[in-house]
Amino acid sequence: MERASLRGLLQDPRYRHLRRRALVALAAGVVFGVLLGGWRIGLTAAILAWAADSVYRARTMSTVPAWRRASAAERRTEAQLKKLERSGYLTLHARAIPGSEAQIDHLVVGPTGVYAVDSEKWDKRLPVRVQTHRKLFHGPFNRKPRLDEARWEAAQASDLISKALGREITVVPSLAIYGPAIPWRILNIRDVDVFSGGLVRKWITKRERSLTTAEIDAIYRAAERVLPARYPE
Image 1 (cartoon, one colour):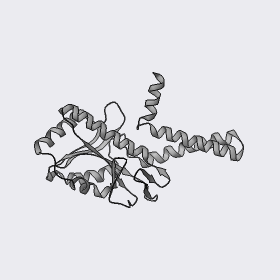
Image 2 (spheres, helix red, strand yellow):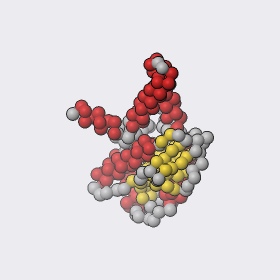
Image 3 (cartoon, helix red, strand yellow):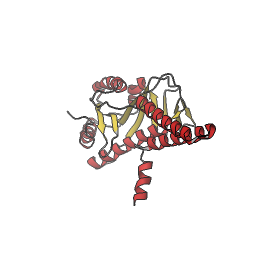
Image 4 (tube, helix red, strand yellow):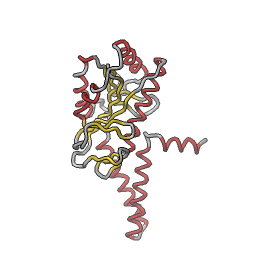
């Protein structure tokens, strides 16, 4: 039972960054230890690699600060989404996934469907590229864990809302990236739509209308119940 629980923990998208960090540290320790011929040097290299990855993640991953102020990327997305209100779209910001530390930065419900938007501020000095529509890179860093996290968050929201309403509700996951130039308009990578942050509104409104006003209101109210505010007033 403990072994199964550990396996599940390692596979959980919320903790995959720790597995990656451990592998990076291990690789650095082995390489430097072998090249420079000393376990102390290898251990030092492993510690430095762990710390460097921690700093990089802290600077590039979107999080809501402890004092409840949204990140710059979240504020920019929120400003765009506010303009959709006149078109019948409703938005919930910084909604928690119960039983986890994960959150959906923006859950949007409107005439064209239901969307989970995670706003990302990445270092503009590093290029963004994709390989075979399955791998997303920011500079040398593989952002697969971030894609998996966004997909998992949307799936959790979909399940919770569907159970609350008694019918299937699909929540479409996305990453809205600010900072570096994105060499495409909208690209689906590992079932997550990835695009420049400035395209949030177009990404949502370009789809066909599928929900009535009554359905929008019901979904919004259900989402409000099952996805609590990360930082309630």
